[in-house]
Length: 130
Image (cartoon, rainbow, N blue to C red):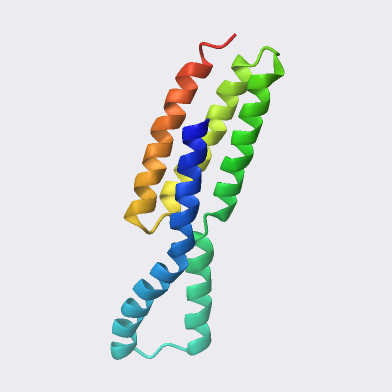
């Protein structure tokens, strides 16, 4: 759990830089497009807003943090938690997949892949818990 939590924090740090990186990348691409085509300013603003929304990973990061808290609570509960941890591993994996698919930064993608590997280890361990 500590490693998943650490990787989630790393992803959050990298995700915080994504809007600026995306803005720079889009600006360069738009400059090229605008030199050869006329695009309405309001239409351009709409497209940029849509791209920014699609790249936003805050919701996935919030869910990953919530899953870490839930896993820790299950582990100290003293109850039979094997199936619950296995289900939680599926949820972790779903969020990590979405994080990777939304990433526009190779560093964030790498953290997402490391997160997926750690989640896979967690799943293996959870399957051994009765």
